[in-house]
Length: 193
Image (cartoon, rainbow, N blue to C red; front, side, top):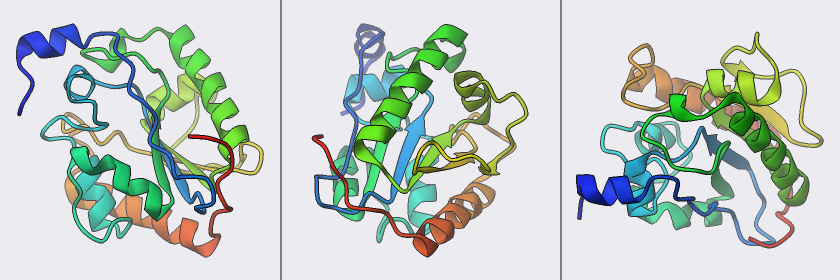
């Protein structure tokens, strides 16, 4: 059932739980959104707003064997994939976040990487990445500097509002990430989820 406007407003500032592989499953890629939107927070599922292209890009790039619905997000763990957010609180728009929130989210994300050790961190949103990690010249694609043992890739924001990245182009960038991650498979996940 689609959330109502009232449901979405009630979800403001709500935090979504991370989706992570269970211990022992090789952790290939941790996808990080900017923060949950109100639609996602109201449903409890990452990238849930109709029109968001995360799930189609994940499938079209070969990360998933079929197109998953946001409500099926827990199936990602068995595939060695996870989802988190830079900033945990839900907002109507990402521009409601302060630079301090994004930097704090970057610190939290680094701690999660140290604990769970995915092979690759894929941040969906170059502008948020630049702010969170103090790297103003970052471009889409693989980054030269890893975070510890985790390689970093910056993806375009999959929001339907990001008109410069149409579905085919977005899926192609996700596919470049998948091919790179497959060339250097992940380690077994550690820690609790």
